[in-house]
Amino acid sequence: MLGIRKSPIDKLRTAVGGDKVDTSITQRKLYSYDATPIPVERAIPSAVVFPENHGDVVKIVEICYEENIPIFPRGAGSGLTGGAVPTVERGIVVSFERMTAFEIDTDNATVKAQPGVITAQLQEAVEKVGLFYPPDPSSYKYSTIGGNIAENAGGPRCLKYGVTREYVLGLRAVIGKGKIIETGNPVLKDVAGYDITKLFVGSEGTLGLITEATLKLIPKPPATATALAVFEDLETVGRAVTRIMTSGIFPSALEFMDRDAIRAVEDFKPAGLPKGAEALLLIEVDGTQSAVREQIEEVGRILEEIGVKYEVADDPSRAQKLWSARKNLGPALGNLRSGKINEDIVFPRTYLSEALPRLREIAGKYHLLMVVFGHIGDGNLHVNLLYDKSSREEEERAERAVDEVFELALGYHGSITGEHGVGLTKRKFLKWQTGDEGYEILKGIKRLFDPKNLFNPGKVIDV
Image (cartoon, rainbow, N blue to C red; front, side, top):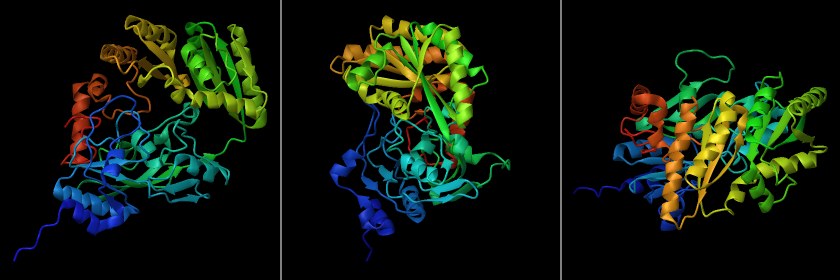
């Protein structure tokens, strides 16, 4: 007598434990969303699976590859381009929220972390032993290390210290058929062969599932200082950024807010920003006490030379209030319109004085409210097109404007994304940046690691 064949979900329950596989409609619906602010194609997964260790992940991939089940990896669901959204109903979401262990090696200044570790918790722990993990995306209080690696997350401090990629020394990952690869080593210099570690960083879960990362740490700077610069026109902003960045000073953060961003955040949670200004810069320097004092004084001299008013935060509470205003921009924009398209384009710094006014022209052409802020020191601007969700005509205008925003960035030899990734929402634009030959290379890499196209299918590239 033939035995009854187990369903794929039953196989998963047997392999990893029934308490790690949830098929309730409530959980399946909850895990079909991430933080993407615009509607994207999505499907209700057949299950949500919660691995607790590397062995669980191996078993999950083995079964999914055997049964041809798409796998949608998920950190905290804080991504903004649909990277964690399931697109196939037969698929499963693999949530790493239970894999939260990490171990600090103070002698080697490294930390080994599982993918579900919350970024802020890791930062707090390493700072207690005098070390520093710089990448600081706006979602750092709840985003995970695995998600940050998948998206190659950035943040304000990445101007000076670099994005997540610069801190990933090695990875353990599970690829097609449940095969295990271990890349890199806990050393600062390693040029043996192709850099598979860096290839995984920013791959958005399309090559395999990361189960552990070895991260580089650096000494924590002992002091910081913050200055607020206020501008009456956009062109001068670009000039100021160029002057500061070519002065010999390397700010730890150099953030931009345009007039509508200033007004939005002041209406949301007042921080004492000048609502009548055309734009502002938040400038942070760090280092020793004496170096910080000299650097912030030099920044002041540069601003005075080009006629820009500024203030230096006179105490830590004032500095914290200024940076909180910058962090509050995301929720503040929700009060302006019901719909938002948030893009994170990048320009070479030398073109910022030209590009900023041209962004305003695009907004005017389509009769839309555009709010611009971001990491202007490295040319990474967050362009927010706001519209009324109840008006399909207005939403279509916003979508056409986005095309022109990307064309503008690429026309200045920039990029369609600096930290949010490609995911679903920018997939059609990737070929604009890579060209046909570059796009074919990306497809070849995807097929090598994932011949069945089961890891996060439909994201980044079409295969």
